[in-house]
Amino acid sequence: MSEYDIIVVGSGPAGSAAATTAAKAGYSVAVVDKAVFPRNKLCGGLFTGRSQKAMRRIFGQEVTQDLFVTTDHMRLLSKGRVLADIPGAPPVHLTMRRDFDAMLHGEAIKAGAIPYLGHPISELGENALTLRDGTQLAFKVLIGADGVSSFVAKTLFGRSFNPDTIGFALEIETPRTPAKDNAVEIDLDAASWGYGWSFPKHKSVTVGVGGINARNANMKANMTAYVRQTDSDEELRFKGQYLPFGDYRKKPGRGNILLAGDAAGLVDPVTGEGIALAMESGSYAAEAAIKALQNKRPQTAYVHYSKLVKPIQRSIDQAKIWRMIMFPKATKGYFRKALERGSSMQAKYLDLLAGEAEYADLRGALLRRIPNLGWRFIKHRLGFKGPA
Figure 1: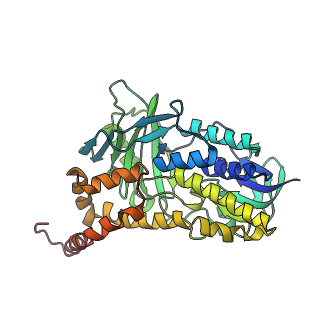
Figure 2: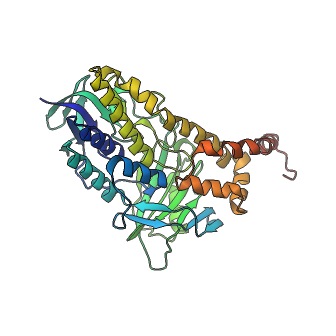
Figure 3: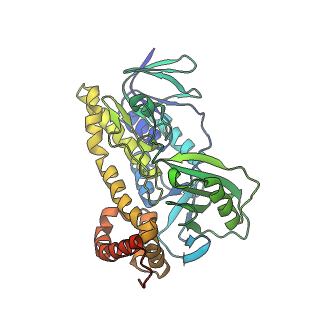
């Protein structure tokens, strides 16, 4: 049985960040993934300024033209009706996860992590795991970064996610036509308590819809309508994936086993931002593991991690408050009108999408709107049809 200080399960952004951080610190690290890289990954590939900062800090990498399309053109819609067409918005970057994740995985291997690829975990114990091919690996600390359907999370807690609150997304990669511009399109009403997206890449456009699964009885119908709306290839087969969408684990780990990224439910419920939170939480998990190992107390890893990951969880809680403005019937009209008339709400939403603002920065703007929003909610509950 091979023994490692730290084993990371999953080599997406969270896992590669954890493996790179720990290996650079001089610890023996194994990274386990059921796939072989490069591999396909369902994701819009929105890469914000927050993601850029995290990638620079953890991997020492910058946004490059070979992996990213950069645009400052945003288009916000409601069931195809343009609310706002905004050139000169805060820039965002778009990437194909197949290539991006392969790059990050390569950085982890260059840092010294030992890869075990192509075989899923079949058994996980307190200090060892077994792969389906029979390989056995021992660890002092384990970091589960194996996605929303995490084997590690299921082993710890009995299930990998809560089916009542989980999100779900469908997506296609449609060919990019010469007539298609470089705008990022977001349709706030393509799904209930979710949205549709059309993200340009170098050779294609990623088109998808996602929202809270329990509120979308027929997500395929939503996707079919959105594919037609965006003039995408209707012959392409939809690919589906569950999405945490803000439903994070209050306790992402136990003892010497930690959860990061989607496995911990760390996805922004407003912007859908997941890549930055994955890289950040992966590096925090590695830092917590390192501190526990330095103290020769690997079982205290979660104690350290729970403190480091708290700001991410707090940000998601704040995002949930903003979600209560964007999606409920009582208030969503107010939010869309604010976007359409180019108010400060529009600027703040664009800053959030670009990763140039945090929810704590918007607290004052929310407090100023609470009286008006409260009155709208009361009128909606009472069925009052008078003027706003």
